[in-house]
Image (cartoon, rainbow, N blue to C red; front, side):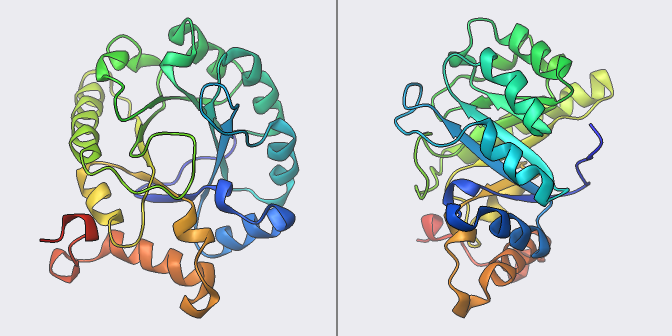
Length: 246
C-alpha cells in the first residue's frame, strides 16, 4: 500500500465513461486536472447487466499514473478476481456482499493481497451487511444508482443511507480508533456533489459528468474545478441540486 489516500474530500473519475481508444491519456488528463483516485468499474454481464473490463486494463493504466486505483467488482463470484486485480496494480478492491458466499473471507483475501478492502451497497441492500465486518473494512461504497450502467440519475433517497453509514463509521472510529472512507458512486454531478458530501461522503465517484464534459466548458480541468469548488464553497454560495428544486 505505497499510495496513500489524501485527507479530505477526493474526486474519483470512473473510466467506464472514458474514451477507451485513448485510455492512458484520459487517466493522465483527469489526474492533471486535480483528481487523486481513478475508479475502475468491473462488470461481468452476470451479477450486473453489462460487460466491461478485466485486470489487463488495470495493468495497462497502472504505469501511466501514481493515482490510487480503486477497483469496484460488480461480479459473481468475487474471490477468483481479487489476486489478478491486486497483481495488476489495484490499491482498493470493493465488492458486493450478495456476490460473495462469505464476505468476511473475501475481505480478508483482499487485505492479504495488500489492497484496501471495501464493501459496496446497492440502493436496496440493507446496512445489516456491515454489522460484523467493520473491523475488516477500509472503505464503504454506497451506490446512488442501481449498478450496471453509467450515466444514470442520482437516487435522492441515497442521501439518508449515506448519512446513516457516516454515523456507523463515526461510531466505529470512536470505538476502534480507525477510520473508514465513505465512497458514493452514481449520478454525481457539479450541482449535487456538495449535498452528497454534506451527507457524509468523502470519496466521490463521477463518470459521465467528468469524461463527458465538453471542451467549451473547460474540458476536464473545468468540470473537475467546478466539482472541487462546490466541495469547498460556503453554504450561501450553493445552488439547490436540480433533483431537489421546488
